[in-house]
Amino acid sequence: MQTEISEIVQRQNEFFKSGKTLNVKFRLSYLKKLYAAIKDNLDEIHEGLKKDLGKSASESYMCETGLVLSELSHMIKHVKKYSAPVRVKTPLAQFASKSYRLPSPYGTVLVMNPWNYPFLLSIDPLIAAVSAGNTVVLKTSAYSPNTNEAIKKVISSVFPEEYVAVIFGGSQVNKVLFDTKFDYIFFTGSKAVGKIVYAKAAENLTPVTLELGGKSPCIVDETANIPLAAKRIVWGKFLNLGQTCVAPDYIMCSEKIHDKLISEIKLQIKKQFGENPLENPAYGKIINEKHFKRILSLIDKDKIVCGGAFSEEELRIEPTVLDGVTFDDAVMQEEIFGPVLPVICYKEIKEVVDRVESCDAPLAAYIFSTDKKRIKKLTTELGFGGGCVNDVVIHLATSNMPFGGFKESGTGSYHGKTGFDTFTHYKSIIDKKNWIDMPMRYQPYKKRNDKLIKTFLH
Image 1 (tube, rainbow, N blue to C red):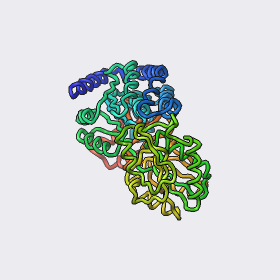
Image 2: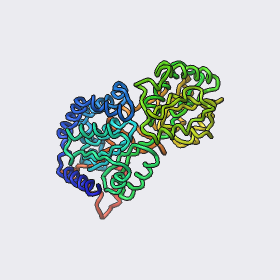
Image 3: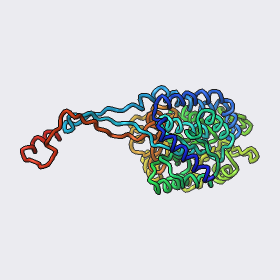
Image 4: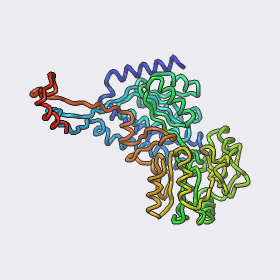
């Protein structure tokens, strides 16, 4: 495998050096081909997602393929503008010249995807990398083999391997990739692996983007629209059985509305998933037995107020709500990444700020309130990657805003123009004219020029 990867990277380096990907029309033609290939293979992609994660075709389109097609549409429309030199103001001291920033691709980049949204989180960064003019090695997760096959079919039908290559494998393949010199690394996954990526990248001074995770709080105060809040929280928390990096990890709610919120959450679980969610064919499943058992180990049976049933054979766990939870409980010691929703009460909003700020910075935060001052306080004072007011999850479903983490939840961001910028180095260039040459900068320096120099520089 090491030889194979080395050969792929070498061919991609040579392909990049040929200059073909510097041509914006060349990039655009492949983006259009990729769009068409995804449209032609939607059924096969959705079937792969169904086998790996139990996703329905509707959920797969809403949360994976549809978002990818939207991102492609955005890039196809804007890549020419994004790739153009950007003129900037030239200071008087540089007269006569023009100044501009020239977008330039890094070269051969590595994109590593996770298993929870295996199509979306593979193809979205790939779109940004190709749009910026890079060649790409895409490493898929070993936990989503059926989706991987669909991805490889689509990619290989569009790109030659020296342009974009898809690589399968587990930890041994990852180790080889980590020891290989790339020009940029884009990683989505756990903090544990993210630390390894960061350390390995540092050995070669390779720039990175890390899309990680964390325990994203969902704050519900006494002014919130409780029925609507419960409806949206239940949708976002149990989407993909909670296997979503920006899912609400836990609720902190005002004790004044606690009982009503719990009641509405129970009602919404029944409305959205039925009386017996384990029999709902659109509910999905946990990715594998390892994660299934890990999630079960986080459930305190004495604190279950809704759900709790599971099917070991089908790797399914009911939407489960835990009440009376404290920050010392096992479920609050790690990112849950499953269909378990702990609820914690607070008396004063200051408790929320102090508690959330005392933990690692989360990838997302959600605030349900109609109090504008409180919303401003929480969005301003809390540290998090991104989030929503009176909704959950949807902030990542747009090409017009960057998506990424903050501090421990990640570094860097992407989507739309920000994604293009992530895989782009901007060369700062001054184009100086020859018809005039100001003599004051040259030695020997003369005092009579000091005032003139100060005039130019201030």
